Image (tube, rainbow, N blue to C red; front, side, top):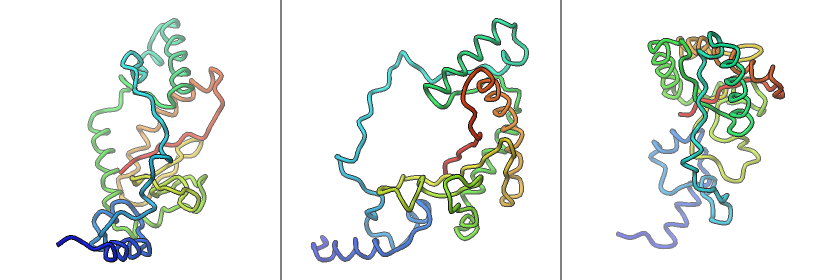
Length: 203
């Protein structure tokens, strides 16, 4: 049976009053009868995004050239790294010497975090956007009019490595971060403005 306008209105009002702590909790909640307004937007709110240029691929940085390449190879790679940071703000890192086992365990630990009970993850909900460890669904829930349809975990790893107590194996990420810290330190020494290095993980 189709819902009446009155029933739909009541559902929206009910969802409006419900406090969801994460997108995962929202999607699994039996209370969900319609999408909360905080996760919806109108066309006028959307940014116009240009179609990706197939001739402008995601930058790839060869880590091995930074540590074992010739002077010319190292100089070119640092130049490419700087350009990637300035224009893309991210890049794909290859030949980084981090074992496949470590990478797979890291991914497992990230999944383990997002699979923690909601009350456990709430321990890492930061009160400030600059907190070194911060879990949430949007950049600034108190300010953003429309929330992102995601859950994230942000960790500042340089100049001090911040880790989590849960899950227990989360510190495996440190080895991967050490490679990233070294790589980005080269871009900063080549003239980029220094920023706290953080890794953002999406669930």
